[in-house]
Image (tube, rainbow, N blue to C red; front, side, top):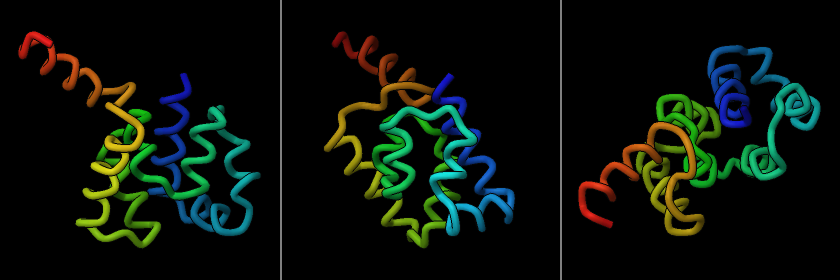
Length: 108
């Protein structure tokens, strides 16, 4: 359920100017509207794109949030790489399934 809430936050902030304004004015209050883990809340508050990616957020949603934060495309790609280096493989969502499938095919 939490991954859904994380992605719902990303969807909302990417599409709704009111959510964007509230992010800047009252981040804690905004995040209270979503059932997020402490780790997810912290990653959003820090703008930790790498950790949000590792937590399983959809890349389409995440790239727009990164742009909202002022991150360039190369910095976004690097943040995802850094996230994996720091936090390990993607834990949930479609990217984790791809990784697990690759490992099964490789015999890992």
